[in-house]
Image (cartoon, rainbow, N blue to C red; front, top):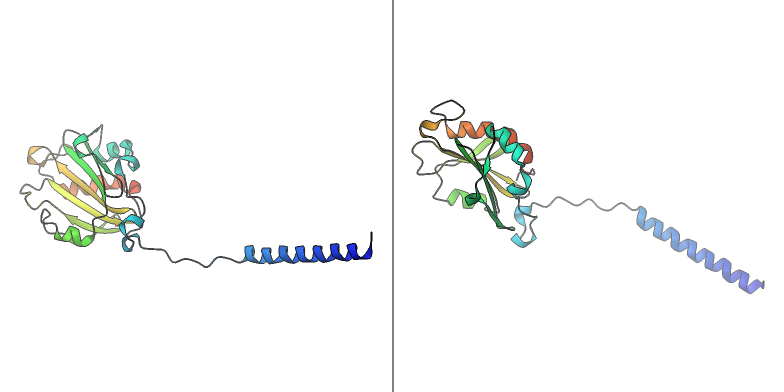
Length: 194
């Protein structure tokens, strides 16, 4: 082998090893930490997928929450990606509805269908809104609204029997029933409260 070819090979190896170390330097540098983005600050088309209660809440959790077998309420089912997802289950005493929407706090507060809204409600360690239907004179409905990383999640209970009958009790308050029901489904609601 000639001295010129040997020098060229040594030079090539040195260049290649320099490239390899430069590449190693690039790959060993840690990426700069990104600050988490509040999905509510993003344009609607850039937000994460909206929470879909029919897909995310197993019927077994609903049955545990309501104390027995339930049937889906097809009239409550809506599936409009990144706009609205609703799902409902019922038994003879209660209708449980869960909604996923990107409706904002301000929109809920301005909605005239709701009664007074408790904006400082806290359920199972999570801050939320609590309200009822404005026209509900018999205390048969209650809403809990969570603002999560996957949209606003509204959990609604409607007592179906006269005199607020629920599990052998009469004159139960719908929000008390909702508190009982929430315990069994909280683990299936999205986190990241905003």
